[in-house]
Length: 80
Image 1 (cartoon, helix red, strand yellow):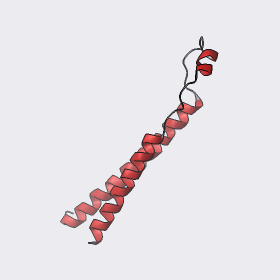
Image 2 (tube, one colour; image 1 turned 120 degrees about the vertical axis):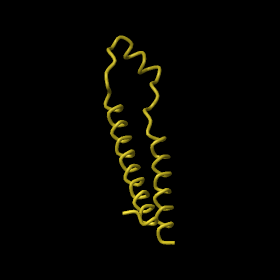
Image 3 (cartoon, helix red, strand yellow; image 1 turned 30 degrees about the vertical axis):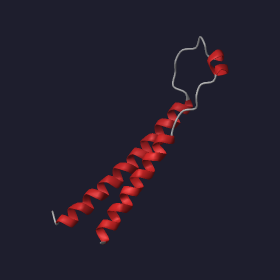
């Protein structure tokens, strides 16, 4: 029972992080922003960099939770 509780806990963490990942978005570009930047070259804004960093952190946390689930399943099966 101990292992199943831990696996369920890690799966809950993965679901929570997945919902957080869906919420990491860039704000929509307003008409005013489009008007002000009509002739400018496309470039990476600070908001894009922040969103990428947040996604990367969340994805790394998801991978850690998945490896914990794999190690728990291996210990249940007794695979060395």
